[in-house]
Every structure is written in structure tokens, then in C-alpha cells.
Image 1 (tube, helix red, strand yellow):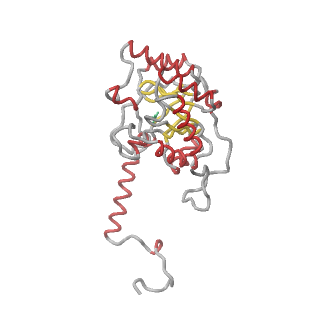
Image 2 (cartoon, rainbow, N blue to C red; image 1 turned 120 degrees about the horizontal axis):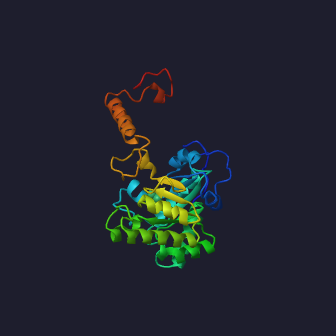
Image 3 (cartoon, rainbow, N blue to C red; image 1 turned 90 degrees about the vertical axis):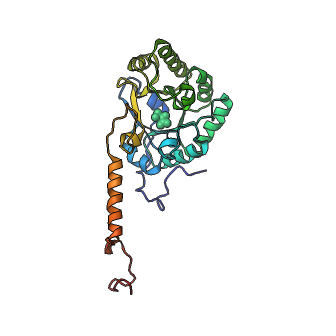
Length: 291
Ligand code: KIV
């Protein structure tokens, strides 16, 4: 169990501004064909605070498996991990809708299992929606959740939880059969009631056609500028990693900045230039150090 808001007496970060009305699933749905939806991933309270003023949707993606935990894929990610990080992101945000990924194995078995686990995520974190991967095979589950009050974001095309079945992370839809299947998947999950649909790693024509075909907004990642919105993994677009997929544009160079700061710190510690007087406590300000 966790609280949904920051304890302003104990938090290190600036408290979030006075609570305001968050974007809701119906508000995101209403953006179909309108102002593009800005979405990014977030896994921590502080990153959520920094991103929230700029975003409509923050996704606590199971990509945290690789980004935060150094895992080889999203397969080992657990409900407990998703719950802890989603609660932190809710505490650090006040405006964006927070959606949380259902991890591999937590929803595929049956609609009932999916409901139990989705309800747990929403109760424990304060997030307003879940995202789950899969097309036609997941339509019944999505309809089951939506009918019981759980807003769902769909995710078709390149679905990283299926890496073992797909044989890698190549963009999808290069031949007609695969393109038709992705379009059928998009239609099926939209019909089942998703309020938004992530299209990942697909040929541009498929993204454009799917965006035309479904009534909910599409959110592209490696898809097309003509989707109804875009999402990227924040650490990828901030330049924290050297190796990123081709569809990532780097808007920052965090890796270099962190390296430079760590190097400056190490150099000052080694020549005893840090801490200085400014960072040192003394009971008697005029007492010489070491007495
Ligand atoms: O897990 C994730 O971060 C995602 C987005 C990249 C869409 O699913």
C-alpha cells in the first residue's frame, strides 16, 4: 500500500503544485484527430515531476526492466515492480494521466486474472489506466476490463513482451500478411474499448491506415508522425544510453552530463577540494578544522 501524494514534510523534491484536475481517459479519447497527444515513460517520482508539465500521458512502462533494472527484456518484470514505480510516478505528477503497464504473465491467462491484477495496480498506485500488449487474442480481456471500470491502453505491432515468439525487435508489417494482421489487431482492440492505442515499430503505411481505421487516438513509437500522438522512452530521448532503436531522436545528452559531473566530483574529492566551508558543519564557526 502507498499514498498517492507526496508528503511535503519529508520529500526531497519540490512539492507538486496544488492539485488540479488530471487528464482523464475520456479526455484523452476526445483528442482523436485533434491536438497531438504528448506521452513519455516515467518510472520515478522526480522524473515524473519534471515531465508532467509537458505531457498529457505518463506511461509507467515495463521497459523499466531494461532501463532501471538492467534486465535483458521485459519478460522478468513483476507486478510488484510495476506497482512500486507507478505509485512513485503518481506522487510526482498532478496533470498527466498516469497509465501503468501490465507485466508479462499478469493478464494473458484469463480476463478474470487480468481484472484482479489490473485492479490491484490501480488500487496500490492511484494510476488511472493500464496498458496491455496484444491484438485480437486480447480483445475479450480488454472488453472485460473496460466493462468493469478499468480504462485500457492497447499496444499492437512490435510487442516487446512477445520477443521470444517474434524472434527479436525488428519493425513489423513488412509483408502483406503481417500488415493485415496488425490492422486486424488494431481494429479488434479498439472495438473492445481501448481509449488509446500504442502502435510500436510498424511500417508507416500501417500506422496511417490504423489511425484512420480506429475511433481512439493512436500513439506512435517508431510508427508515423501522422499518429494522434507520440511516445518515447524518456531515458532514450534524453540521451542516457548510447544504443537506442533507430526511431529514437535524442533531445538531450544526459550520459555526457552525468559523466562530466561524476568526473568533476571525483577530481575534487581526490585533491581534497570538496567539501568546502559551504558544505561543512562546525559547532563553533571560528574553530580551526581538526580541533
Ligand atoms: O514499456 C514501454 O515503455 C512501452 C512504450 C515504449 C510504449 O510500452
